[in-house]
Amino acid sequence: MRVALATLPADPERENEDFAAAAPGAAVLLDGAGVGGAETGCTHGVAWFSGTLGGLLLRSITTHPARPLAGCLADSIGLVRSLHEGSCDLTYRASPTSTVAAARTGGGALEYLVLGDSSLLLADRDGGTTVVTDRRLDDIGKRLRGPVDALPTGSPEHTAALADYRDALTGLRNRPGGFWIAGPDPRAAEHALTGTVPLDSLASVTLLSDGATRLVDRFELADWQEASAVLDSSGPDELIRHVREAEAGDPDGLRWPRGKARDDATVLHWVLS
Image 1: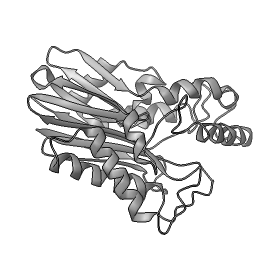
Image 2 (image 1 turned 90 degrees about the horizontal axis):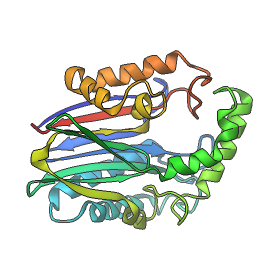
Image 3 (image 1 turned 30 degrees about the vertical axis):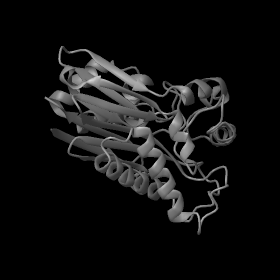
Image 4 (image 1 turned 120 degrees about the horizontal axis):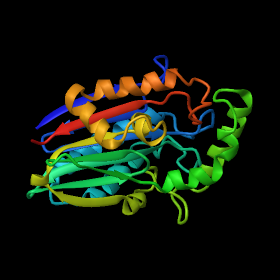
């Protein structure tokens, strides 16, 4: 097992809200989310939430190899809740949340879980690629974000439209017909995308936050096979460099409309063979 990890905050002056870590036979990546400028009801913050949940999840999936990943995630969400429900008001609509991507090997298979808009890139030994992404948030976003994408990123009008958009999204979080993400309620884990893949068919598995997948799914400057080739030849740092280069060339979001000019970007590349 060989693991390469790269992570870069959107702004060097602000905390990175992504978290990624690996242990023998397991890896997790979380992308913390909040509502910019909104009261969260939590004194700890988004980075604390994603980091604490990520560490507990990695511990759970390694110490309980027979427990399904969704069960491990539910247990971990419950533990995080118990750590701060006495000091924080978790009924706030804007309380901290996080996407989750996790993978674990065992019994000749790779077991995976994806919740929220982080992604899992599976590279086959024959050179093919398969991507597992939870598209529910993206599908809802496409219906709601027209006014946001019509405005220059970072302008006062864009900021106001983005606040309205995020408020609408928050109202659809963790409910039928909406989207699912790790937050205060362990039941969200029941809605994660899960599956298994024969281990001997895989060359590598890569976990990516949506700040890193922009190169493919928003900017369309590479396909997943090309992204996989960059990871194999030059590693996660190079993939994130390509993302930052594209963002720098479109700071106002005129070519590629987006909520943030730059986002935290994290890539965990796990070579299996």
